[in-house]
Length: 144
Image (cartoon, rainbow, N blue to C red; front, side, top):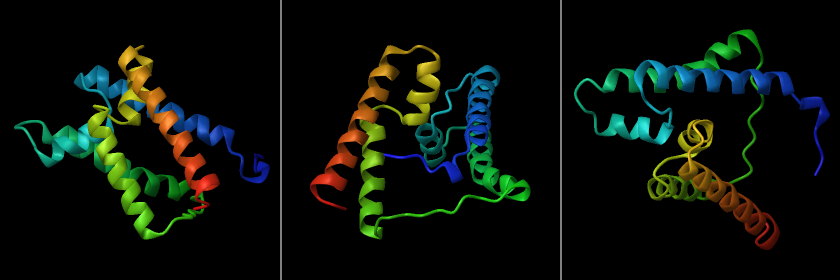
């Protein structure tokens, strides 16, 4: 493994991580809600009275943020080394995993770990282990 030093952006990554942390903290402090994307989106699919506004604002913020960033800096080039079938299967597996794990990486990994939740630590460890195994199998055993 090697680092592509020409495209290494530690300050942008630090700033982005800080913004994610601030947004998660503000949502918890101001609304009493955890910034788990799968739960926020699921709540839009089955809206409860008085609950749709903040969810919609959060999702729109996630969608609009890259556009705002693009106004001040160049977006990195996106490169996807998978075919459409693999992307669909991966998306479905992530969706099933978030249901079984009672949350996603943002809810458990960002918000749960910062609250020192043992359940989130176990879930995040499982997410990471599954990712390591998946990459190993896909890249080294099946050469995808």
